[in-house]
Image (cartoon, rainbow, N blue to C red):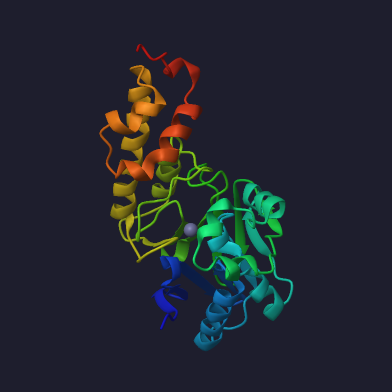
Length: 280
Ligand SMILES: [Zn+2]
């Protein structure tokens, strides 16, 4: 049974089997914030029970690491229980939540729990920020940082400086390779992770969006893999290999099946000067 475990002083993480999602709670003398709210009303009720059972106080704010449904569709359950709390996200993510609601995501149609997900009442974030914002919890301050584009255009990470914790959202994943989708920025992602790594130490506790707790070395390794993918795209394009043959011709660190969007978007995002017309 998932439960909140204290991974650092007054920082608790619950790991849920459904999609290996992590939910993080950070407590201070004046508040308790929750990072991500899971992917449906039904699932968020399970999380809400776990929050109550932990007994660390009422929630005072929510944070959504990005605008994918599995990280914010639970918002309504907590806003209904605790009142109209501030819900923080980057401006990009907030706008995306408001604009699409995620309901028409074509990937959801085939999901085994599609009906449950689609039945959820959606409450987007209501406090946007552009690059960084601090939240005062009384005896501790936490930082929300948008380190650049990567998994989406609007990812944030949450830093708890006094406890040396970093909540990474889906910029890092442990249960699978980080998901490079149709709204990702594969060429910028490595540099975005460099900024995040610059805020870590060798003992930082890193909470990925999905999977088990990891450390700086793990993030560094994932950054290298993403860097190899970006450099391989650049190299292939500069040698005139067309995008349609890139998956076949490249030497990729991951199963090329996972890299379809990466290659398509990578080619699109390359500056003109780095592309050459295919020679054949
Ligand atoms: Zn996710």
